Amino acid sequence: MPYKDPAMAKEHRRRYYRENKDRWKTPDGLWRNPYANNVERRREVARNWYHRNKEWVRERDKKKRQQRREKYQDGQCPICNKVTNLVRDHHHASGVEREHICPACNLVIGHAYESPEILRAAADYLEKHNGRC
Image 1 (cartoon, rainbow, N blue to C red):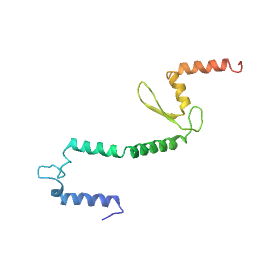
Image 2: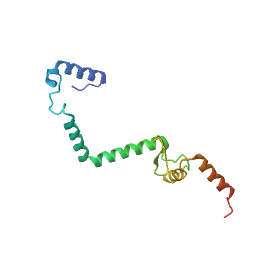
Image 3: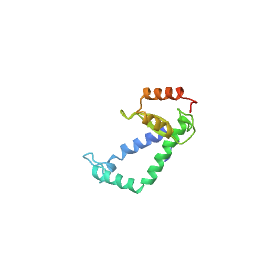
Image 4: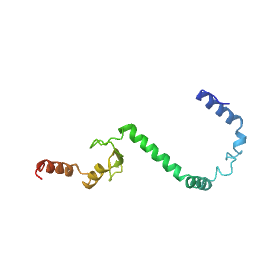
């Protein structure tokens, strides 16, 4: 009995469960499904499902990450403003995720040990020697 109103559908499910509780649970409160109360069996079923569908799960996750990236940044690096494939940047000490940046900018930050002082010194160096080569 499909309902267009989600609240009506929820109420219908609750009422059906109340009226048919004995079909789903035993008198001592356990589920009638033989695997529902067996944690090891549930883990095994989940593990088997994942191994059968591993490629699908990876593709789904990859698409979700790409959509999230495009939604917030339009595929543009916040440092160099290039539109390219972006990678997830994170703070190595704490693991806190930052924005998505291009691979080149990610390497620059990584090689500078995430130190603003080193990056400022590098910028000063480049400005000092700009045009001398």
